[in-house]
Image 1 (cartoon, helix red, strand yellow):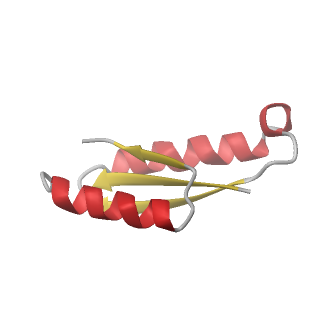
Image 2 (cartoon, one colour):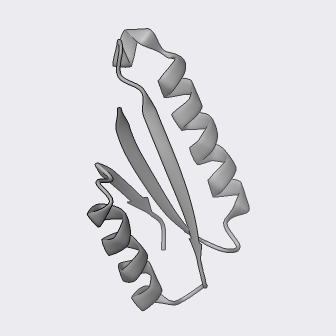
Length: 72
């Protein structure tokens, strides 16, 4: 199982939806992942707060997240 985390600003609700759909599509596609499944976590942060983004990123990496996606 692969864990993926996305960090978005609170105003990025549309990005959140696109991310969830992309992960769902990947998880259902056996040609790409075969038996691997993806779990995801989404964190929302305040706009223009890079310190909070770094903190969230470090927490997710400590929990074993393999891929981290953020959008400024």
